[in-house]
Length: 504
Image (cartoon, rainbow, N blue to C red; front, side):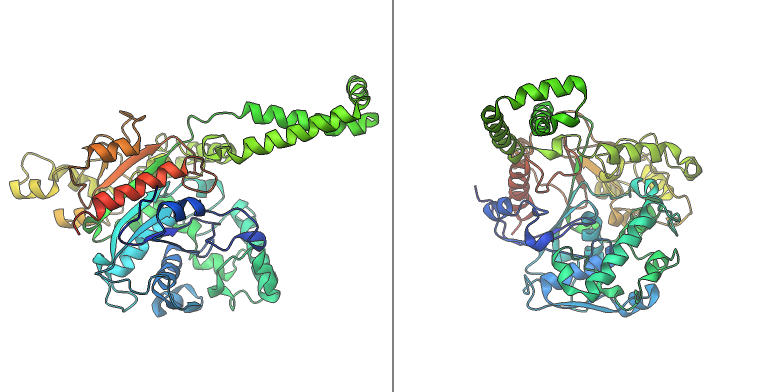
């Protein structure tokens, strides 16, 4: 069953996530399927970062957890956003020999995917002054990542430069800041829930600042919710570099075909019915007669209740939450927000294509980091018959002209040449057919990832292409709640070993 990789696989969780230290005194379920990962590939590292920190802050925390040392957010960044420069100490790191000769693979779930991309960008610039470059990372895998943002941010009341006063996001920030202050004053509370945003401990010096709409955290815009706004994320994608130097995979999820757990719901209703029988006197007349009849057989009721509890526990232990409508209301909020964003239509966003989501992220956003209109225009020029032969060879099957990539036409991408566009990786291919598509191809959607790996074992997946694999599960895909996580990670580790590490 083992699918051990040569280089470590670093896992980065999404917002409100956690690592190997679980909430509620470590009694709560893990974020990742830890036992599965340990059995399949012991050569992995599970990181834990700030629950709502920005990509930059989270990327810094991941680096020092893996490499070792005191988290350094950078003097310039810390001064600009107004929080502390240094954070927690991780000594030694989980993989202190991390280097060009010993790279890692980054796997990010949800917002962890954009954190992985940000970490790669920092390594390419040697932001940590350890001599890093693009060769420190061999591959990036996004699992339901908001690579082009998510309209859930708008549904929560987040805008590009602020949050709506007393909107959902603002109320959440009040609760989180109060808990942060309580945990700072009473450290034992971190064992219940550790927010891991220590860089703000001095700025949040009173409980009253939590209720202020102008508190330093919200004013800094240095939070995950802001960089997940589609307008901001697409603008950030325009500055990506060296994306053509590593392997890229996006696992796109969908909540369109969820199965309603009728059996489990019936068992819960029956259990509640039996428990209510002890309160027959306070029930309606018709229910009173039924429950009174049940009370005549107390032993049978006790036996039936115990049997239902055992059967229900057995069913829930193997229940696949990733294929059930557990995130229906969030999915509905995203669709509602997408329909109401008329003010952004003038910027080129076609929100008809953004309605489909997995309960947290729009499917349109998961495919690959979309660029601005100018990049798409250059994309078309590169694919025109007048393009030189040498340019065609360098961009063959790598630049996919996506006419819907018209977001944010601020002219920020003017002057890009072929190599610059390839560096930003404005392309994707369907892993199912290994051909270019403007969206995930429904062809062979029932084909398993294992079959695809087997069929493509002779061919080499090229660097700089976002290969896309579709999964009919909601946003819980790849997490502890995913009943098919074993198959997913087994095939992912095989892909990494056979394709990404094959050249060694």
